[in-house]
Length: 74
Picture 1 (cartoon, rainbow, N blue to C red):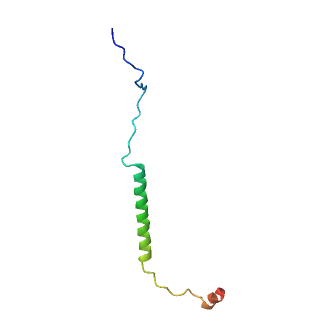
Picture 2: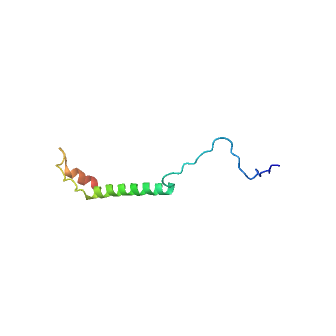
């Protein structure tokens, strides 16, 4: 007689098996990379903005009266 195999321990899957896609870069590592890139870009903009020379002051607009501004400050 044929020997019976124990099938109760075996998992039976019906239908298609879903294969999990493993990401190339871990989620935490990807967030760290984007955070570092963003901070570096912001730092570059901050440095460029503060190292440029300020433009020289131009002439006053027509009909400008400097006494009007001094009175409004008091």
